[in-house]
Image (cartoon, rainbow, N blue to C red; front, side, top):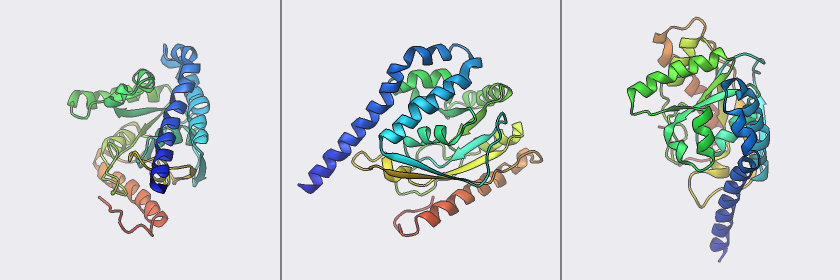
Length: 255
């Protein structure tokens, strides 16, 4: 009986999440839509998404961010934001962490999500990882956004890893792009999102969600040949943070 009650609670928690995702979009739909007609109004779209969508979702779910910053981003400067990817909450949490407007680079499959997908395809840089031309085109579109003073966000694991993997191997894309455009890499470790709202349906619950913003990696003097070194250094700092936070869980593996 106790297990049944717990499972019902998990189902209701999931339903509540989707309600929180949908309601702000429906309420502010005309304004959000108007702000997507021109790339020049993206900072205003970002501000609304951050304050009237991401924050209400996290707080409405009882997931209260606790952000520790070892370095702060400068206003008006472009960055490459990267973090581990374990939950649908990662998108909302990234929006809350960064005051600097940024554009997500993500897989095209997210377009299929009702309501969210409609705006996702209008404001984000979509990539088909099976299409070489699509991957190449990302650099061109990212350059245009960087020229507008925006930052870029990529989850370098290239997707959500299996539940038993603490941190998957990183793809090169974010680091190639950071070096090519000479922008700092901002590593962030999301420590609790998997516990709060993982992709396992009957799981999760409210509580704090910790974020560690690590010291930035400068790329000004780096060459394309330094991509793999940068990639592994960034991954190592995140992995160390995750291991320190999760020493008691001996069943989690590292890919």
